[in-house]
Length: 307
Length: 268
Image 1 (cartoon, rainbow over the protein chains, first blue to last red):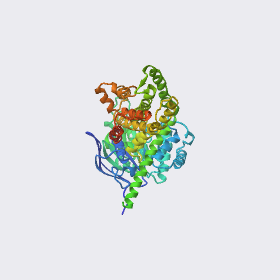
Image 2 (cartoon, one colour):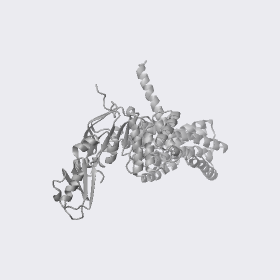
Image 3 (cartoon, rainbow over the protein chains, first blue to last red):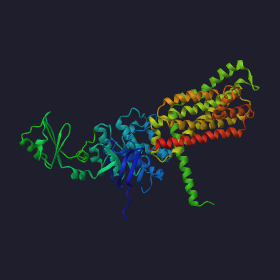
Image 4 (cartoon, chains in turn orange, blue):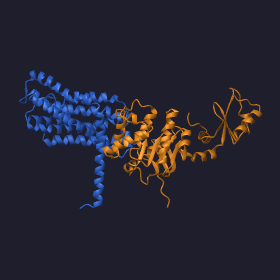
């Protein structure tokens, strides 16, 4: 018999009054994988995460986490989860170190164990030199790393990360991704939400694309790109007032017009560019790139992820 | 004889509840350590200043009351109302802040700590504060000759009961509001009138009967009368059990009110 998935949702629904935030989703997360919820703001990702973290009760449908019922066994499940929330809730009046020891005590760790764990985790997230300092002066990336360290105090089996790198600069994001990747190597199951397609591509083995509370596609980043996009995309910009869409018919497999540029989906980007020039069109800029999840999302919903 | 499995399940629930509640208490104590000297002023020094100015100053004009000096008469009132004010102060902005600003409750909610334990740990923190505060106050007033009975040793426990009975309903209130402007209303229309009309500075028998009803309804009055009975070595106006029952009623109803408010606010 196959092992039950760590997280399994069937027809999961969350409603707030008349508003349906999550509209009947089916998800199964296996042990050891990195699973992502990709979608724009308001897609229902955070509501889903709050149900998985046993904070908010499902309105309808079935949800099992670690083989247990989140409403009845919330305490036992939360003891084995690590939650890294989107809205930071560090204790700003406590030191960096105290934030970890205080939190470790909530999980029933002894004082000595809490201190040992805090020291270890601050090393892991490269904040050991800030241990005695206050939380307030830390940069956004440091605070996020501290939140991740805090979520790890109980040695969780599942880490839930809600928008882990939103608002961080590129360098801080890469450092964070590196740490999350290491966690995954250790066998921790990662579940994260993001509206950054590069983050989803970097971190997720498998992901679902959410829009309007529903799942619109599911698979590995490669699979999704293979299914819903072409290997390459040509981005063309034309001088204002020039209607180029009509003249691009038959170039590549599909053309999408965005407010500022045209996207030509093609198996071979360079060949598509050559065809554009052969037709006598002179775009002001040309960029050939590989397809990304952003293109998948655009194709599935007709909208871009970050608006 | 209970089944061993049942006994061990009950034991493990009790152990985890105690450990979670203590963990929450520790968080508040760790935060408090930074504010200790600032708050020591309002906890220890302010009540003493009150006693000196009103007890000795006003007392000089008032003379004796119920056969004791005015200073001896207001000592228990100042003691209980200091506890009351600490409880209200600790459960207004700090509680709203942990929902709204630092979001400390949301952090706890992501752990095995239950909502009842979040509330219990915070109330326990206030109890831990009020006990030494009352003992120090007792020692100071002893030097001023403010105590007339050894029964005074029970006043720390009475003050702890006042804290529990007033902190819980205010926590329930704070968990239901989003705008801290409501606290100004609470201070103006509940806390200050309650301090003025709960027998702290004069006997409530001086008030018209309608106002006496308000005093009887307030947890502070019961605390003041129990403390006064203890420090003067007399019987309180109502039977002791009736005063205790009123404080207990506030604690139970307030605890339920707070638990409901916290649950609703944290469960979205």
